[in-house]
Length: 328
Image 1 (cartoon, rainbow, N blue to C red):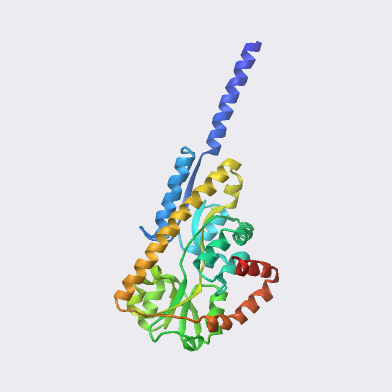
Image 2: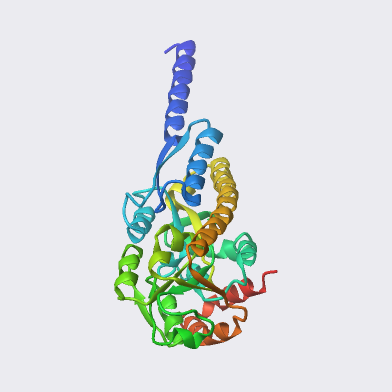
């Protein structure tokens, strides 16, 4: 082969290789989200998809599937871990049982308020939690709000832990939440979120706990007319990506994806604050009997056995608990 032919063949090979490289780098991702249209998380995840497409010049596209159409949250967590989907927006509550570091945020009253949660999750504690999640195949790209959870029930205002005694209270499926209710003398009733309305209406449970938008948007306020502002749980949500997918990205694309997720989180937090206030105003206008628990110390003291049991089982997580509590 002549030199000029060899040069031409080499150049052609380079062009082909470059084309193949570009094809490998292109990505079409699927994303899961449990929330309905117009919900803050849904709007923010659509913004995330828009930013990925725009900032990658179309190399990375994300098709979001909202409303849990790809499965329940536990199903979606497993789908993300094995790579059946690439992106998801999860509450850390259901992730906690499989990622101990993530479970720390489910300790009652671990956060003083939402601003304290933001500072902790956007700082070193959040990085440590994300590192723990990566052990199970999930990388947290950014943190979303899910508000502060408080108690609501069909019977009476809750002002002190003893008011919970004897009540059947729906909780998410996590031993920490069951322990929280038991520590106050109540009867925890783990069940799917979709079952709560009917269970409140028929007396299967006396109460539940959640944030303002969830209490309002599900109609729970129609069947449980007492809302007591305990703010016992402030559980962040994550924009998550499959770890293998993330680690296969170039450094530049990793930064692009993280920046898009964090930009979407700014939007989600703004929308969440507005939605929470609107939901609160709506249910109070509808006649819900609302009371703000001014002194939460009695509730915090009641949680000491919950913390002790958790740290006995997870002694290596004590520094993380202390780091969150010390976050200024």
